[in-house]
Length: 434
Image (cartoon, rainbow, N blue to C red):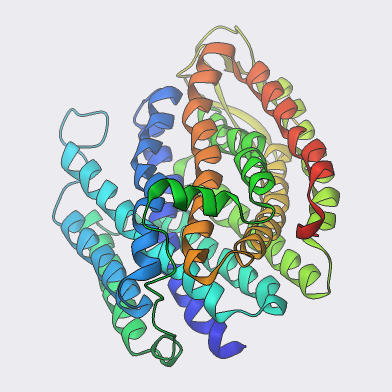
C-alpha cells in the first residue's frame, strides 16, 4: 500500500499550494491593505474553474492516460507560477489585485482543477475499498500540508523573500513533480481508459450519474455539511486581524497552527476509519462536537467585538491580555475584556474538528463513486467534489457581505443555525452508504 500512497501524497501536496496561496495569503494581504470584508470575500471568484470540473472530467475518463493528464496539468501549474514571478503583486495606488495577476491566478486554478480530476481518478483506481480510509487521510493531510506551506508559510516568508523568488520556487517545484509523475512506476502500470462505456449524450450522462446508489443523498450532504464552518472560518481570522493581530502572527496561528490542528484531525479520522469505524457513524458523533465548538466561538465574539461601538480602537488578543494598537476599519470596535488566547484556541479547535469531518466525508464520497461503473467514476466523483466546493464557495464568498450588513454577532448566529443542518440530515442517510 505504501507504493500507492507515496505518489498520491506528493501530487496532493503540490495541489494544495494554490489553495493555500489564495485562502491563507491573499485574504490577509488584501484586508491589511484596507479592503472591505465584502471585497475580500468576492476574491474567491478566482476559484471558479473548480466549479466546472464536470466539463473535462468525461475527457479524463475516456481520453489519454492519467499519467499524461497529471504530467501536463502539473507542468501547467509550473508555467502559471513562472509567469506570476515576472509580474508585481500590486501596482502603485491600486487597492486590489492587478487584472493580469488575477487572470494568472485563474489559470492556476484551472490547471489545479484539471489535475484534481485526474488525481482523484488515480486514487479510485489504485485504492481497494479497505484502503479508502488511509488513502483519503493521505489525500487530505498532504493537501493541507501544501496549503499551509503556501498560506501561513508564505505570510512569514513574504517580507524577506521577494514575490518573484517565491513564485520561481513554486514553478520549479511543480516542474520537478511533473517529471516525477511521468516516470512513477505506479502511474505507468495503470489500465488504459475505456472509451466505449461513457454515454455520449449529456442528458444520458446526468441520468447515469444520478442513478448511482446513494448519489442524491450524498449531493445534498456535500452541499450543506461545511456551510457554517466555512462561513465562520473565513471571517474569524479577519476579525482577529481587525483586533490588531499582525499578518505574520495571524499567519502563524491561522496558516500554520490551525492547519496543523486540521492535519491532526484528518489523521485521527484516518486512524478511526482504519479501525473499521463506519463514516456515517463517525460523522454523527463529530458533528455534535463541531456544533458545540462553533457555539463557543460565537460566544467569544461578544467580549471580543462590540456592535455599534464608536470607531477608533483596535485590540490584539494575546496570551497576556489585550492591548489597544490602532483604528478599526469597520462599524464595530473591540472591547477590552476577552478571555486571553481563547479566540486563537477556538480557531485551532474548529480546524481540528473540521479536518476530522473532511477526511470522513471524502471517504464517504469516494465510497459512493466506487459504486458507479468504472468509466463514470471520475465524472461521478468530480460531480460530488464540485458540489462540495460550491457549497463552501457560496458561503465563503457571501460571508463578508453578511458580516458587513448584519454585523458579526448575527452573522455567526446564522452560521450556528446552519451548522445544525447536517446533524439532522445524517439521519436520512441510505443504508447502502453505511
